[in-house]
Image 1 (cartoon, helix red, strand yellow):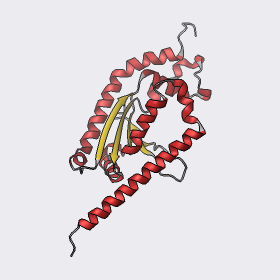
Image 2 (image 1 turned 30 degrees about the vertical axis):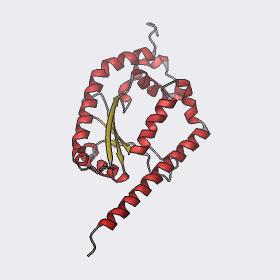
Image 3 (image 1 turned 180 degrees about the horizontal axis):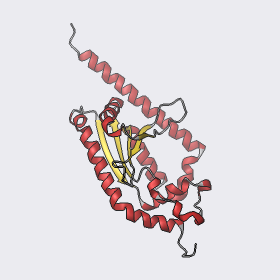
Image 4 (image 1 turned 180 degrees about the vertical axis):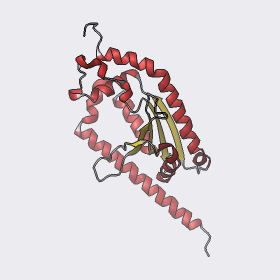
Amino acid sequence: MGNGRTVEDKLREEYFDLLPEIRRTLLETETRVRGELLGITLSLQRYERLLVTSRVKECDSAVDALRRRQPLGLFDEDRTDEYSLTSLHDLAAVRVMAFPQQRLVDAHAALNSVLREWTADPVPGAVDSDPPLALKYFGKWTAAGRIHAEVQLVSLLVGLFWEVEHSAIYKPNPNLRGVARSEAVIQRRNEVFTALRAFEAEFESAIGAVASSDEPKT
């Protein structure tokens, strides 16, 4: 490359060119999602939760995500112009977390009008026979838009665990990322997911039993 600019240099420049549009996309996505969920939010019982969070993907995180997609995890410096951060689907992302599970089902149904034209990309469970850990969709609000938005629906318990895991493993030091791929950590993580799902199922069963016992007898 004659000017000495690397692929990373070009992508970082592109990121800050895209940033205003990423922020607008995030604002539109979060506003639409919250609007569709308002009815559920206003009807929550004291023990129920529905949280909506959002984030703009950071520059270095976006560049690293695109790099990991490449063969051997490396950019080809002779193909600089072929790479673009607009190929990422989560530059603007909204996460919907709900508890118990039925509220996640309700949220998914409420967002159908927003998500039905988007592409589904669920987060798989630990093994093929497991249900998805999260439902995920990506799309654009306009055909001319450059930025995909992502909406993720996940159990509140799993979502909060992910936040702790991400902060503990990825944020302090990138060198710790290999820890997440160790067999021991993967096994323990899967055990956590299994335990959280079992708790949710048992909780909903107990709530259902109490509700049934409170119904007037005929």
